Length: 232
Image (cartoon, rainbow, N blue to C red; front, top):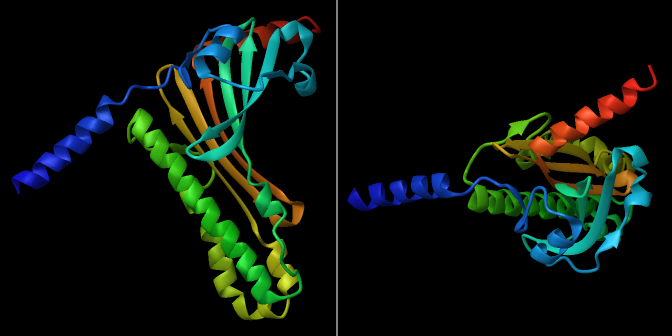
């Protein structure tokens, strides 16, 4: 009994002792690009502002760097407003799922493909949730769509119901490998978003994690409104 109580208290204290995010990978919101590059240890730092097409008057710049998060390869884009760091977005590389070798016309082959997508995605989602819980405490997110942990619930239900029909139409099974889920964590200074968007037939496997400064986001929105009002 005493040991159980001790473990419970320890877990609760751990959850509340985690510091809320005020930046990304050690770089604080408001830092200049050179500071963020140095503090975060970003390598292959490339200016992608022109590629992303921000209006020049908005004064937003972006830099991209390869990284690894929770053991997964990712490409991180760092955003700056008037040289102030306000957002980081990690796009994870699951290109192996788009290039998976299987036969569209064989049920067993399509089913193996779906199971690979299903298992790799859920393992990844678990690892991201675990990382966020360890860093920022076990706060439950808000869901605009499905919880990423349940991203395949509807698909699994459909496949179970239509299993026998799909055996004779494996390509229809392949086209049904579609899933989307989104979670948001709100902290005093930062919003964290995590999304999973999958469409096997479109070769789309988008897994994104983003952290945004709430204070600077408000400034940017105000600036956008000012720019738009000039055209009235």
